[in-house]
Length: 136
Image (cartoon, rainbow, N blue to C red):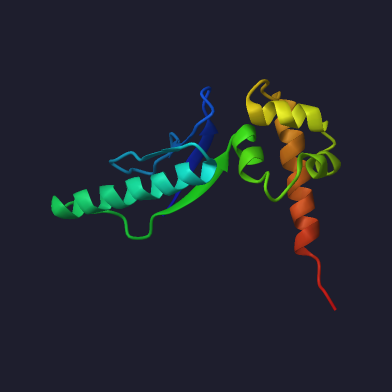
């Protein structure tokens, strides 16, 4: 069972991971928090493990095939992948100014929906291009 889990950067600079509205009938919630995206995801999985243990102790059913599809707000995505994709590289891929991207990471500004869509579309196109590479 695939469930959406949202990674979001808070106003205090920390990150949260939580379920969205469509929990597909799950009777529990999970929350992960951390100073980095990875810490929040790790804490989210710890929360899942603790909930599974509690359900087992209480004789309740816990889904065995529970899989999370992580979805990021723009700031969280940029922060999480900043050690792989530089802001200057992202500028070349997306066409969004490096200064603007920096403001999104730090939370000084939030991108418009149009900019979010532009970034997402550009990254998907880049990923598709990369996926078609074959070395000889």
